[in-house]
Image (tube, rainbow, N blue to C red):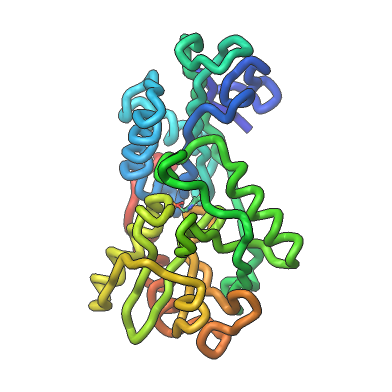
Length: 290
Ligand code: PMP
């Protein structure tokens, strides 16, 4: 596999980052996970915009233009023959000393991995996933904004550990006020009385690219949408529930904390949105040239 690292494509075994890189020492950096469908990079522009916003929020200057990074992502796909897969684009603070000071890291590290991904087993797309509510609270937006897609995922990992210990693979995270924020690596939606609802970003959700696509598709399908506070009770009593993410795509939720959602099967509107999403991925995106 060829990896883009700081301006060059190198073999995987040569794609090495220093132990003094602050991405590794402190989780100081930002990243994107991006899908490639049918030889086209899906929503690349939005991913790059979010990467730039995340970088700006932590005062990290990305040493390439969006056009240069677009070209590098396409090249990474071509060199690795990725027509359907996943791109991981990472910008770290770069090499510094053992202190925290980010301004003593003169050069950000940039790398791109183009590979395949299967996040969840096929079964959960047909039968739905079981979620638990994690005891680990979503980090307070006043401490670190969940809109920053940073390399520091410990908050999410602590909740993920709870999910796995509970015998499942994804957990719902509540914010400090007890409202639903999102899952450890996915946004969450419910459907009630035909309305598609998701927590507002201010409740601690990442501004998910897939979340945005779902909101667009729901409007196109003539479904009312709302960004609204959601409680665990709202999830438990919803007609339908699903989670979204670039890697996950759209996953129906069968149970929340052991309560079946609706009749415990993927809901009608969820299935419609999954189909509309699949159609969109066939028609959209930046061609990689494969
Ligand atoms: N929330 C979190 C915490 C995430 O890490 C992700 C991405 N894996 C999402 C939501 C979904 O965002 P997107 O649709 O942009 O992948």
